[in-house]
Amino acid sequence: MATSSGNTTISSSTSEENRNGSNSDERKRKRMESNRESARRSRMRKQQHLNDLTVEINRLIRENNQIDQTINVTNQQLVNVEAENSVLRAQMNELSQRLDSLNGIVNDINTLGGVGLFEDDGLGILGDFGNMEGYFGNFANNNIIGNNSWNSGFFNQQPIMASADVLQY
Image (cartoon, rainbow, N blue to C red):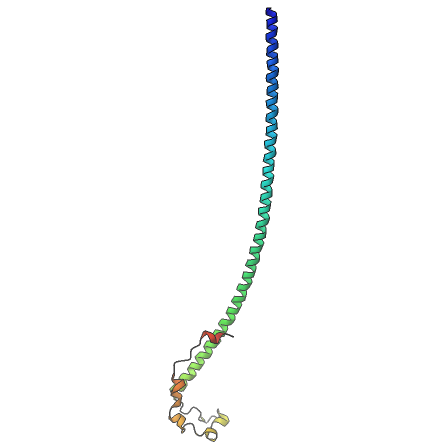
């Protein structure tokens, strides 16, 4: 009986090994299946991330193109404004020079008081206007000069000043 009980023990352990081996194979198969599924999910996540990045790249490229267009338009506007500013500065300088000249004339008139302004200096510079007696009488003896009208009213005011309205065209 000892031999038969030994055989029973051997056959029991063999069937246990078969079950354990079978369980081990089953666990191995399940683990491999789980790993495959996990790898598949990882590849899907990776692909989705790649798709998301591609969409983001395309959005950023469009946004970058719009910004470039805005910059180009703004730079063109800047060039136009600088050109207009240059023209306005040149006009302002010209008008300032004219204003200085007019203020000089007003100062000369105020200094001279109008006396002898239209008299012929003998050099013939005034030409036909040198002797104004035929047209308006003699300015030097006229009451206009006698009353010193050049120093009253308009010419006796402050120097001529330019305003921003004058610079508009």
